[in-house]
Figure 1 (spheres, rainbow, N blue to C red):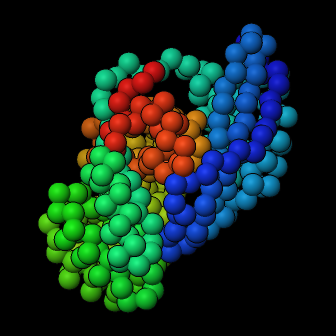
Figure 2 (figure 1 turned 180 degrees about the vertical axis):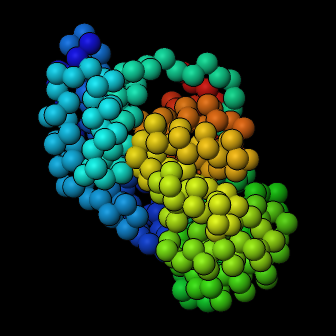
Length: 333
């Protein structure tokens, strides 16, 4: 079986509400889809969204990377193509993830035979405290009990945002995601004043490179600290954990470069007793499906699942087809 044709296309899915964080505001999920065809008539599909503020990639740069590598892969077997991909030092992480997802579906096309249901967080976008309470209420009415609330508004209202949602929905599990927006002083103040018992994690409170600050926060925090932007690669994950810069790691296919890289990270975390979140950017359904599959493979290590893009789509039929029932993702394949 050899790769014979590849095809790229741009896709866009409207969101139910604008998605707002400390880093960006978007109203659609935009991504590049790559399809690899084989000489035997099979095809593998992968996807990558542009997230310039996080991975530095644009739609154009993803397409350029995929065009370059896709052309080199023609005539190779999927295993040979994956070896080429793993050794390419120029391709960026999201484009690499798209090709890896497509190749993995050709190398191992059968779904995991697992009946493990997953419970996904749903993201509450950064807004005024009252607007966030209303959006959280809507999510709760749809059966979502695990909320990731985006903070980092740089307006002095983050404590009120957190308090408002935790008080209004004491039955919810709440993760606070600052997206690198807090200073050390803000982080120390907020983690000590926000004492609601339903807060499970604080995610990436400081800028990516402030690992000394992350170590200080991690030592002091009564709430577990989750590293996201501070830990892209396997080497960064190991460094963050071994130096005490976080308690847990957010693993994202678009951040680390695909399924194989994520497996390496998750295997190391499993061996060292490090809990993980399987996270995502705003992504299309194919890349989310790959992350769901991987979450089931590492169910003992993946303690939180943040694969809520389908729950945020304006077209609710996509989430239903993927097995989402409220915030529970049941096996559908």
